[in-house]
Image (cartoon, rainbow, N blue to C red):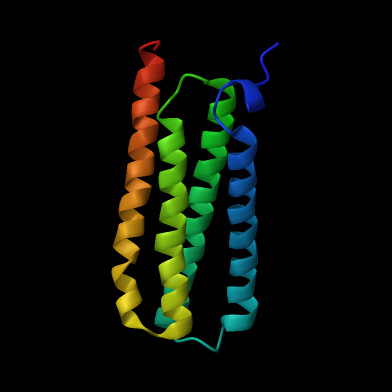
Amino acid sequence: MLNPATDTGFPVGFWLGVAALFGGLAVAAGAFGAHALEGKLSSHYLTVYQTAVQYQMYHALALLAVALLGAVLPDADWLRPGAWAFLIGIVLFSGSLYALVFSGVRMLGMITPIGGLAFLVGWGCLVLAGIRVGQGS
């Protein structure tokens, strides 16, 4: 029987671990923001922080979906670049917003759109994976 975690060439276990790590960190960051940062940040920076947490969680879930798809669709070769794009997007988008909130250095906000672009690339890769699977190749 095919073991999807080892026989597909797609590192399912790695991406499951990355998804779980970023999902858990999003929960921790959300709790930290709700309990430790309220009253310490302006409403603007609190909103920026919440946006970082939300997008981190959305894309941790996207990574989870990619990992699970990689386990059942071994020929979906667009999943690997999609996973990397989501990972890069989390680091650049959410990471730059966290850094902005805690440092106050507004220039860090210039990195955020690059992370957003990486998210779009990730979703585009999923579209391409779906098209390829739908074509039976």
